[in-house]
Image (tube, rainbow, N blue to C red):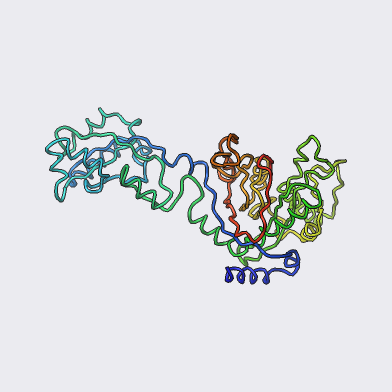
Length: 416
C-alpha cells in the first residue's frame, strides 16, 4: 500500500498545477474490474447439435473435400472454434466410451494408436442425413455402414483458455483463439486497463469530491462525474469536465424526483458540449444567445472546482462531442444517462458503486442476489456499454475501492 501511495503521489505531482490544485485530502486507491456483457453472462453455455462422421486418416481429406463440395461454405465454417477433426484419443471421455462400445469395429478403432479420425460435418439442423450418407458412401475406405452421430456442442466461441479446456472435456475439442465473440476483445480490455490504471484513482477521487460538495450544499444527490481527455501519443491528460448531481437545485424535494436533466452525467456531457461550442464560436467570431427561459440541464458551474475545470479549454475541439474521452463516476449511471454516454461517443467509463435496481451499464440481473433488495426486481441488466444492436460500444469497469475515500451511499431506488 505504501508503494501504491507513493506511485499515486508521483502521478499527481506530474499533473498540471491547475489539476493538482483541485485535490483536497487523500487520493483513493482501487482496482479496475471490467464489466461483463449481456452475452457473456447469458449465452456462454448456448449449445446446439452437430453431426459427426469418422474415416480412416488416409481417407479424411477425401471426406472433407466431399463435404466442402456438398455443403454451403457457411455450414462448413459454421463452428470454427471447434476442431474440425479429432483423434479418438482426443474425444471427451463420455463420447469415447459411447462410440467404443457400439460395435466390435468401434472397439478396434479406439484401441492402441488409431488410424481413424472423427470429423465434424456441420450443424444438424442444416444438414440432410440421407444426402450425407449418399455422398460419404463414395469415399473409399469408409465403413460399410456410414457412421453418423449427433453430439451437443457450444455454438459460441469460448472467451478464455479455461473455458475452452472445460468444453473440450465436456463437449468436443475446442480452440480458444484469444478473441471474445460475446464482448470486447481480451487484448483490447487489457490494453485499455493498462492505459488508465496509473491515474484512474485521481479522477475517481475528483468525482467523489465534487459529489460530496454538491450534496453538502443541497444541490443534489451525492453523485459526481469527471471527464478527462488522454492524448494517445504523449499520454498527457486534460480534465475536460467536472460535474455533480444538481437535481434538487431550484426544485425542492417535496413530491418529486428532482430535475432528471441535472444528473451528474448529463451536466458533465453538457459542459463538454459548451466547450466545443465556445471553440467553434471563437473561430467564427459569433456568440449564441440563450433560447430557453429555464436552463433545464443546470450545466453552469456550481462549485469552485467545477468552475476551474470549466475554464480549461477542450484539448481537441474538432472531434464529435465526447469521442474517445474517459468518464469517471461515483455511481453506475441510470438508463437515461447510460444512453447519453453512448450517444456522446464516450470511449471509456469507470464507476465505483453499482446501482443494482436502476443502473444501465451492468448486465447482471438487477436486484438479483442483493440481500438489501430481497423481494425487489429490477429486471434483467441491460449492459448498455456493449450491445450488438446499438451503434456504439465502449469499455467499462467497476472500481473496487481500497476504502481511503468514504463510500457515497445512495438509495438503491434512485436513478443516478
